[in-house]
Picture 1 (cartoon, rainbow, N blue to C red):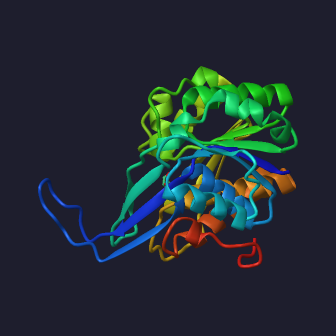
Picture 2: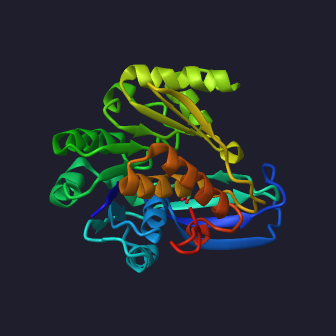
Length: 299
Ligand code: RIB
């Protein structure tokens, strides 16, 4: 097994809109898609499609969405032994994508909010066989913290994607991760620093380095990503793309990065590949529907 994703799954309800309605107003949206999403599931699917062996630790609900989500994991070659059913609704995400490919996302965590530290401990033997643990913040923070402690015990590196930004996240409890991968607004919330200029971003990233996290990778959307470590900072530009839907592009980046890093342990090359993979995903509609398979994209 290569990658353990301890994280969320959602059903994405994507409306393609011309504008958001005002309060009390009804506006017609020209198109709609429903698909599998959730930051954890998206990252797992991206890595698996590229050829990694992926274990998913997550909770689905007891509704009509759950079976489809489990089938989708299996169809993407993901180990579903620790995809657990829960007396709750499945996570859902109403998403609005405008004509300039920008998205606004609401999440209803549902069963994801019940993924508890014991669930992760139950999967300990399977997690112990993985080369990296990948997490996001659509599950309880206590589960994130417990998984980081478990990873230390097992000597497995952790990649934390602090998304969606959560003001309750305690830096002290996540400082043992090997990689933290925020976008600009997540970096700002995490550090309490401005991120208006490149210099601001580097300064904010240094707060995380100073806390003990050795690699900070800030995703910059169409501008690529910047990797900050004790060796300095390196900006790796995005590949140019004509965007139609940016939903899930950050997850595509992390799934691809995790896949490439477990194969090569080359951080810069993994960011170059992740930029290309995420850039390709924004040229297609939907979340997981926009993720290429190995062989469909060259790195
Ligand atoms: O990052 C995109 C994802 O965020 C969507 O798939 C949605 O489900 C939310 O989790």
